[in-house]
Structure formats: structure tokens, C-alpha cells
Length: 480
Ligand code: AMP
Image (cartoon, rainbow, N blue to C red; front, side, top):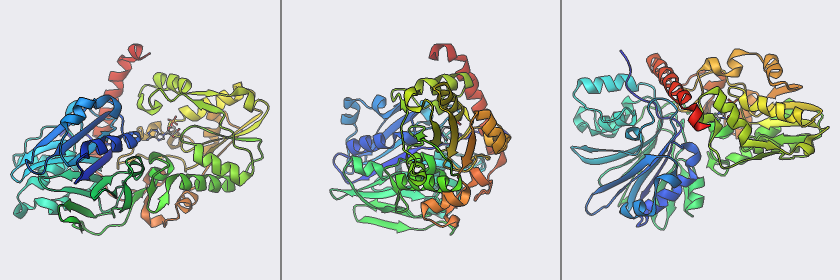
């Protein structure tokens, strides 16, 4: 039977309770979370007295989606917001979040980051019981579950039925609710501003709106924020923590603090570990911007070799990773970065990036450096080789397209045309976080999946990705 759900990838969520400028705070909060999703953005606000929900959402970046008039219309002192990044399935407005539904217990709005691994089964079951779905997003499954009568397994206890990675913010008639799945795959934190409580995927959003960081939400914790303040429930079965280590490596913003540690500092430490594991004699350490910047600093400090940001980034184009066809990706990689050639001419260069996925970026960087006359090029990567799929919300291609899934390190070095290659190993990557190994999901590197997944879901994701890539390839001439 074909699956009907669309996985929700790599999103950013934000919510405000009890502030007269809830929409404006959410708007700026989403700006700070834009790196977590660039396909669509949305805000839903609620007035406490009238209980009216107002929604504005559209495809595009936060700056494109909200005009001053839209923000003026979003009145109320509570809000939920979302930025969405899904390269699978239909990226249409219907699937943009937050989603709003009317239930017997009033209106509910939801914003969701992550993937439900048992979405297909739950959806089939709910449809068999008469639920009519308005979207193909798996977030809607959560709304249908919550909306069921409490005696029938509805309400917060329904959350026990969902499996996978989910960080969610919800707005009900009186409250804001936020929770992390019991493994805590994706981040969520609590802040405070002028008596109002705020939930955000990452703490960098609090800096922007000048809110105070209160704390991270715990894995499996449900925080309910209403007129009486903040209270917590732990409805999930206790599980081992499995925070996505790739958030520290690449995905989270460097100015965010997660698990009591600043992300940029972890990246510098990953660079230091990397340099200790793969020392090399060189004249310059050059980062691949922006993702390799902090690790390159760590490599430079540890090797005692000068840091030089020789690649200059053009900030006015989108992420190359969003372009599914290889030809477009190659073009974007070139347009995105230019090299200060004279800085590297005749030099032994260590080039540092956070990760290699397909190898497109790394290969182009080596070619650029060689063309500019670098005498040696040593590639250093501040995480282990990516060999496996992510089932919990990070968008990686089909494993057959992951370079390290296909080749060993020597073959990768040859493919990149580098003089040497060194990846940080799993233990070193974990050490850099100062957290114990048991607290992480490292499945994309190790293949050790903390939550079993429904294989039909995987097949569906791959089909949707192929379909979408096909569509975009047809549009190629217009994009160029
Ligand atoms: P590739 O060129 O396919 O090897 O991709 C590697 C580049 O993409 C690196 O510079 C990474 O920082 C970045 N990257 C890694 N994972 C992701 C992801 N899931 N989404 C977007 N970019 C990524």
C-alpha cells in the first residue's frame, strides 16, 4: 500500500505566550531560525479573550513571506511559528506549517521539527477510524491523535503512540505546549522576555529578540505554558537520550547553546581533535565557509599553522544543497565561493569542512586550490564519514549517493584529488561535545539507529525525492 505521509525535515519552531507583540517576536525568532528551513514560513497567533486564531504562511523565506500588513493582521498575545525545509514530497503551501485544526476541544495549531517513523501506520489507523486529513504532513497525525477524546487515548497520553524524532510546539485555546520526543533528537529551549515565555528550536533566537535563556527542554518533557506559568509533564516511556550529534557538527547555528555548551566552541574543539588525529605540516589552514569556519580555527590553533579565510562566499544565493540536480549543484558550488588565489599560491594548504556528503563541495575546493597554485592540499573533515541514511529529520541523499557509502578513504582522497584526507573519528567528535557517548544519535556515521523505522517510510521518502528531483531537473534551463 502506498504511503501518504510526507516527512517533515529539519525545521525550526518558535512560540510565545503572554506578550502583546507575539507575532513580531515570532517573526524575528523565525529569522534567527531561518537556517533550519527555507522552503516555507508561517505564524499563527491567538487572542486570549476571543480565542480567534489568525494564520499567515507561504512558500519562501521569512523575509519574503511576511509583509508589514501581514504582521499587523497577526494580533494576539500568543503565537506559534515555523520554518520548513523539506526536500522530499510536495513542497506545497498545503504542507506549510503551522497547521491549524478545529477539534472538539477547540482550535489547535502545531509546528513540528523531525520525522515520525511510524507515521504511515498511525495515519492508516486514524483514517480507518474516520479521520479526514487535510494535508500530507505527518504533523497532522499528531493533531488527530491529540484531538481524540481523553478516554479514547487522546490528549497528551496520545503522544506515547508516536515514535521517532519530534520537537513540537502547539497552541491551544488557552495555552502553549512544547515537547521533545523521549530521545530528544532535536533541540528545544525555553526563554523569557518581559514576563512572557518563549519556546525556540535554538537559543540564538533569544539573543535576537533580547529574551533571557531559561533552560533546554528535557528529552521527553512536555512543558505547558498558560496563565498560571510553566509546568512540566513526562508522559513518554523513559528512553535513552539520542540527541542528533550532527546538530553540533553542522546544523545548529554556531551562536546557539545546546546542552549547556556553545555550538561554535564544540566545533572549534572538533577541529582541535581532528588536528590531533591527523597532523600535517602545512603553511595555511583554509576553511570552507561557512560550515568549516570554526573547525578550521581549531585545526589552526592545534597545528600552530596560520588561519586564512581564502574562500570568499557570495551570501546572496541559496544553499547549494537545495538543488537536486548534479549540474545545478556544480554550478552553485562555483558561484557560491571564490578563492583569493594569491594567498594560497605555492602554499601547503589544509582545507577544512564540517562534512562531506556527495563530495561536490570538497572536490571543487581542491580543484580551486590546485588551479590557484597551492603546492599541497590536505582535506580535513570535522566529523566521521557519512555512510548511512538519517531517519530522524536531517536531509541526506539516498545512501548510494553518499560518497563514503561507496568508497573507502583512499578512494575518496583520489576522487577529491587531495594529497591527504583525514576525518574526525566518532570518539573524538563525541569528546568535543563534553557529553557522554550514550546521549547521542550517531546513526548517520555508525548505522546504529536508536529508534526502529518503518521501511515503507524509507521507500516512500526515496520515491518522493526522485520525483521531486525529476521535476526540478526539467526546470533547469529556467533556473540558469
Ligand atoms: P556535498 O557537496 O554534497 O559533499 O555536501 C557537503 C556540504 O554540504 C558541506 O559543506 C556541508 O557543510 C553541507 N551539508 C552537509 N549536510 C547537509 C545537509 N543535511 N543539508 C545541507 N547542507 C549540508
